Length: 207
Length: 189
Image 1 (cartoon, rainbow over the protein chains, first blue to last red):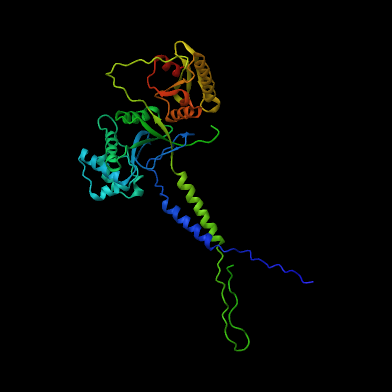
Image 2: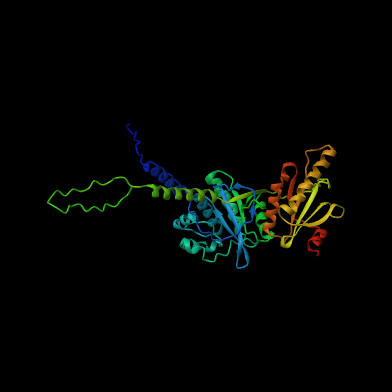
């Protein structure tokens, strides 16, 4: 009797196509990912179970944290053009002239926390040095309320550039006492911004 | 599979032709694909997870002090006040402080503390409202964060409101004014 010979199948598959797809996806994700820049003012946000995501644009973030035991507020605004416009308004208001290069640099920068008079120094630093520069927060007392102007002019700038109302997010340190948060909320409410987001971390299921 | 060609082309004997061995053009891509997918997973997770979460908060308009204030009558049976104090102190009372429906009591944050209380109180208010013939009206929670409470306390309480779902039937509000009685209550002990 003739034996039926089973053809031995090769175990190795052709991975070329799979490899192509994998690398295509990889390229896509690398390009769409935005590099996380180190935070200038690291804060420990409180946790919540609410899972609303922050809007990616038309957003301004007010970070409330502590530097050397003092409560400071840092300001951040999304969108390069909006930032440049806001800086222009602020420069006019406080008579600080920014060069084209500085304005460009400001457009690419993350959050900052210095009085506008010292903003130039920060802009001329390297990105890595900014977090070590010892930024002291944006003045927000009644004598020199620059934070209020930043909020006001960024809203103006956002309406001019994007034709949309700017959203505000408050990113407060969990250990910060309520009056510090309230001061910022009051500042926003003085400008009839009554709705804002509180940035929180994800809480475990067991709460 | 990628193999090293150890065969040194020439033979030992004779002056035969030096024949180069035909090389296998296939390369094993398994490791490469593994690596690629690992990186894909990494980038996918980091891009979607890095977006911070947030919690919506809408506060009422700040009313002008010049306008005569209109008092809105609120049923004391439906109001629950939460006082946030120092070091995670949380006091709740129901109704008015002078004549409380439920006397002031300390609670802890989390599911075994204030949440149970909120849920039972909500149920009571629901029954009360139904008995009165207006089943739609739920509990009103007044949150009073004191000057010594932290931001974490406030977010915890707001989170609790979201979990319990106070907003579905009733409402909650953040109030900053303290009566002397409430101050005493927080400082007590």
